[in-house]
Length: 417
Image (cartoon, rainbow, N blue to C red; front, side, top):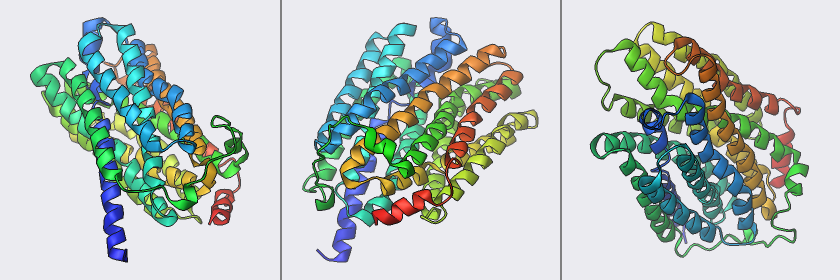
């Protein structure tokens, strides 16, 4: 196979898996889009509403160490298809059975468990079928399928909820999981696992000690926890904050304004993540990530301050904040892949995802608790504190990246090459 044929083959594989993961996420923003309506319908305060948001990430956090670690023993395609099946069931059950706090909490956790079986197993499924340098380059393109899928979900959820009701948005998510399974099968058909990764580990599948000994990888694990705290807290509360902004500055009904701008703001993170990963190389990766994280902290408060001037400035500030929060996403994951040993790729991604989405499960809940403490999500003072709580994630991530001397991850990556 010549160079152009290999490039086309890789592009088909990458495009297919990116499309599959976008489909698997079609229900990811269904609850965020319906949060205000469901809070009114079920009598939820901000803490309970935030708990349901967090349950999605708790489900992911509980399942991901086991599911991703198993990819060191099983073909990741098996895990991915199982995850899609769980997602289809969760979406259908939420649409038909959810009736209050506890049922929503459990079904959101189930939906999160499904993503635990598709997101990082999907990355493993993709990278294990590509040569080493190619697999590092495609990481940010795959990881950006998360904000793309989330933004598409925000738009479709808002549109479907207006026309057909909130239950239809969760049903859409179930159909998306089935479509993801079909696309993944088509995309990977005929692509074997690369020889350098076709290694069966001699350790127990759930022995996580090698990751704890790999200090270079551990940096990225801890930083990813803070990154996910901020990013997913922002995305979980974005539609609610936009509705607050619109209500504060307009007397008319927002209609689809909230879902449209939610989608566009989340989409802005896609080029930011890719550009961040492309600019990050073994020599500057840690330094670049830290700078992005500090910038994110500075920008977060502008999102609340600018609402005092105009609707347009508030929306622009939200764009800038999400770009800053998402810019280190691809760089963090690429750094982790580069520092993980071939026989430990699955378990390293498992720990990475576990800590990351542990942060993601805590972030929305903390923001909700802070909003309640400050008077609820209809007050300006509450949102100042809420955005400060989001930015805590970047502070934690930057601290993690600063725990070791610059170049530790670099040296590990050089040894890996």
